[in-house]
Image (cartoon, rainbow, N blue to C red; front, side, top):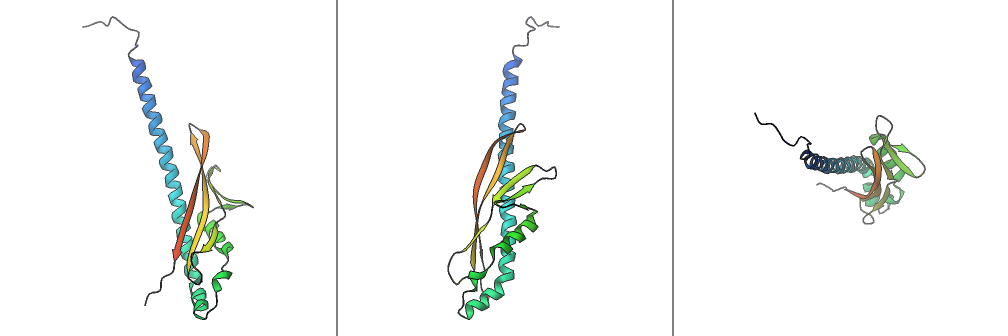
Amino acid sequence: MNILKNKKAESYVPVCVLILVIVMIFSGIFVYASAVSLIDTSRENSKVVLDSFVTQNATRIYDSIKQGNDYTESVNPQEFTDALCDFCTLDETASRLYSYDSEGNLKYSMTYPEMSFRQENELEIVIHYTISVPIYFAGQKIDTANVPIEIVSVLSEKF
């Protein structure tokens, strides 16, 4: 049986530091992946609500365009915002929409969606908003990621 001559465990210090660095890198990757996943989920939910909104208003808008009127000017963006708040369970304030988790912590916030039309007299609605996701690392808020989002919904005629 060999007895170790140096029992100070100095060789474990670099290994422990290396493990800590690797764990911090993986933690950063996981934080980034969760933020990207949250933004993609929000974008997909907004797309579903916008497509539903366009479908609900399609008949009135199409009939108006056929008659030579521009009904698209009277499409109410507040209807879309209300539907989005209901679908995504967002809390509405005077300036932003907020999403909270089950413990009451802020998941993300977003500006009010701005609705516009890509071309006049066509049903191609574009929604613009900015989503803000707080970035936490080791339980502390580091920064807030602001991501501009653009969603387009087009009604195509099928004959």
